[in-house]
Image 1: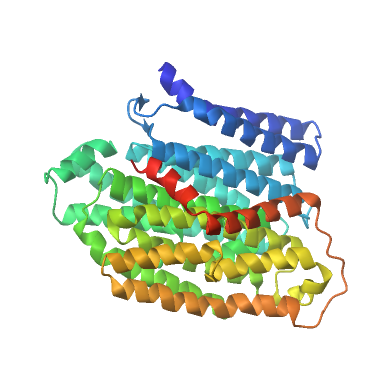
Image 2 (image 1 turned 180 degrees about the horizontal axis):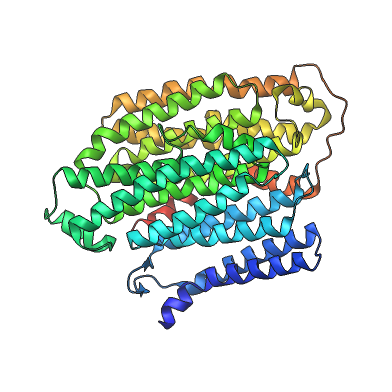
Length: 468
């Protein structure tokens, strides 16, 4: 019990910080004070994280797993949440909302994300995902007087309820088959060949459907554009990076680490989902006139590239998480730069001429867009190159070709935004003032994109430790 409490001390610190921030808001603390308090809470959690090691001990009778993979993903989650909090501090909020509630929900969501990343039991998977989903519905509809934001929250709730129901039904089938929800026990039974047949495949498909919603994989991607468009920019960034990563973390936990589902069906279904996700995401993004919606569909396409690596099986798992690490810098930077350049109006026309009015931020935004497109020598190119190489090594040439063709297609809509910033005439004379915190965040993400392009081995070495 002592080790279990020590293990969750990171999450306990987050909960305590969330409650203190909520109380401080009641007594009239300012927006900046609350934001820096939330950032300090996340940093305390990061510094506390090493004390939760070493791995290998059972936590709360196996409900949580103490391993290097969970440790690495908890660190990833905390770092990306810190970037979201920093973005919210620099963002020019168009409505005067209660920021105490916002930071409270962000920290609660972080707790749910951390617990899901270390889940060793399907019951814990469900509880963590459902907690995150409920908080995300509130965050998506955070602008209570904005009809688009309210609509985003309702749509997210409806799609989320459906996907969670499917996943819960799959979990109940797994319990009926094995008499337990412990993933290591279920995995050992499957590895020994004690379980097979259509019931296991149905359970696997239903669980995959629930996780595909979080990862925004086709056909569970329909909510993405409307929810991102109505949500505040920091929430959209959180959903597109941190929350999306959770879907892939749980896919790795359930489908790979513990072999909860049968592998044979994976090789037939996963490549098709990956190709459809990247293709539909790119085609939808191509026709968008809203930069926010374009980035939303772009994130769907990026999820397709990540899942393409996962579709290759165990051999592509480290490649998928290498892509996720680079994607976090690219997409967080792109959402932040787009928000700072035009916080209220996300239409493409609002970005015309910003290359002359805000040259530094527009240049950094262009770097992220070109990296998302896969232009060498940026980190996005390295991520796609690794996926293509893994597909070629696995002799899946159709999947490799699909990644290449979709990468070419993505160039067109990314370049459309760059053209508007540098070659189109200005349509507005408004000032484009970016606070220093905004430059700190976007500059840090740009540094990450460039550094990982030059030193990809830095991430690969970490991943080698995570997947021991």
